[in-house]
Length: 504
Image 1 (tube, rainbow, N blue to C red):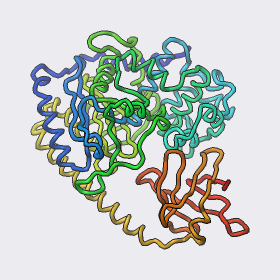
Image 2: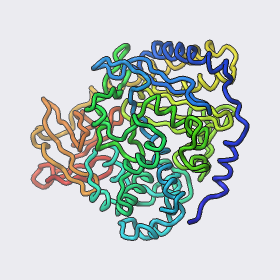
Image 3: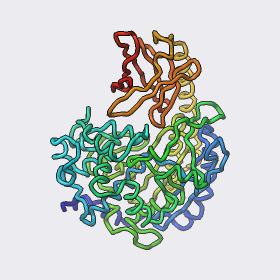
Image 4: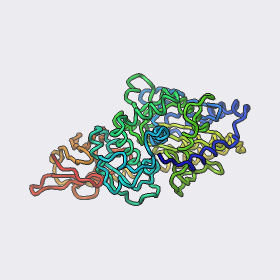
């Protein structure tokens, strides 16, 4: 099996740099400072109901804790054992699991898909060219919208259906082969193929290769089970209204937990994860994963030149963004979805890592980044760190208020739109089917129409085009739905997000 030895060696070399570890005095003083800032930040920002934080160095956890509430409906307090959805930060777990199999020679990261999954529906020209590394590093140049949509949004899928949908793999618009273009499809396609060929779905793969060896007993892809077993699971929220965070109407279920974004975890477990990252696979002083395995996932496989807030991004490894925060190398991955936001990062040269998970993302979700940066700057001895970060909190509050004002104005303007449907609501009721994306059902909800596809459901509003509606099946992501009328003047199909659904 071919391997990227140079990349692995480089990543391992970074980890061998003499660490600027947190001193004993710093370690002792930090928890009180972090706890005070976290509480102040949550109160000042006000839009975010709850937050969990983990900070580690190569000696283990420096701080794990939680503030606020996990769910405004229950009022359950957040602590270091509260499970938060980490969204796309899941990618680093999935990639590590596949890399572990590659390390034992069970899969070849550099072999074209056609060599090990010859019967898939992936078009021959694509299957003969792209590899697992291409898919996991976002350089494949391909997209598969139906698989990604069903896996993450509608939850309407079976393994057999996903296998059939591999035929929907297409060249990606705006990102050719070898060019970085971020997408969930690469991870979803990789794990659909691997499940069919190897017999283990991505959940079992991550559990067996990563979670169980590391002892991350409170991290799981089964969010419904976690709720049913009585664990405190943070719900997604939106801070649209002052002092009244609203529970998102779209919450994750087992059916929408997928390989590109499908784990819940706790501050305690994320401390284990980060300790393993900064030590290349040891936890509590004992080796858990083979030397060089974790380091190999940190090495960039494709270049990029982007910024995300205060972070510069220069590449992408296997499940990790590669870049800098200030003058420090920062390996990181963030994630968000429908009211949840996660920041997971570490500085390999300083052997320092931070995870911050919050249950709001649309109005003040970058609070997660702000709290993480506070930890990094505190240990860097930034002068007047608390005063600096109080000013940053004030800036975040200004941005929050602008977003609230923008949404309020947008809602008011949309409410004035006239109806463009020419028929009574009942005429549009029915099931509309797309072979690729599934069944979109239209039903009456009072004097309005409701659209439902899988676990997603929302009441629609008037739109601007003839015979159209606007719907937010994913909160704050509005899309038009246009009906086509047949010769008899009745609806025969609809266009949603560029795909045609035919009335059954």
